[in-house]
Image 1: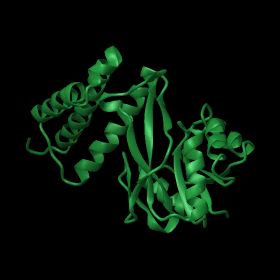
Image 2: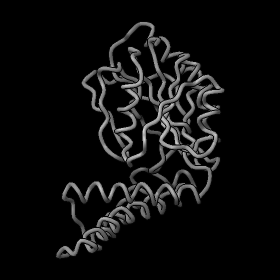
Image 3: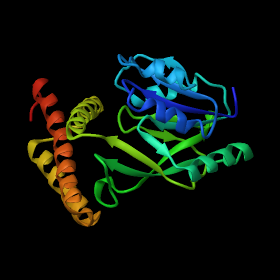
Length: 253
């Protein structure tokens, strides 16, 4: 193995995987996909593009998939990318320099959301920072959905940006929203969290209002305003699904 492995989680990503692998190879020749059961051409396309592949059965736990990737390489550094993320040249250069110099730290990427061709600047989809570059032995991932790394190394920010082409249609967004909110509700229920329908409405209303006013979504025009409705709906789904679990288990509510 080399000094850096780029790890990409995949399931049915044949539309994205070739471009993702080529983008990752601007940083290293060792690109690893962790596939969870693709039924399309994701794996053969990745292999043809020069990546290698490992399989881990999907158990609705994103952190477990990322931690599994750590067992499939002995590289000193690991960089995590999603199949729908693309680093620009400045970021790729910065990654190569950090690995070359073995500069200690956990490194964040400034990520820009691109939804259905629209690049957001404000609101819930405003640019965020995700930490993805670590020494392999320094990181552990936690959280089934919206997972995050645990790492004690000092936080630093990579130069450049990564574009996140997260949804290419409203249909895809609805499918992912349904899936992620189910995982969230089940995980929170198991941890003892409880709610009410009134609480679901309050969280949804305040979440949408916060995105519109505090995070200034209105500066993104109608797409920004609509994104506030998206966020409110997503938040409501999380809590009503949690409430539904309480009803199904015949709890006093």
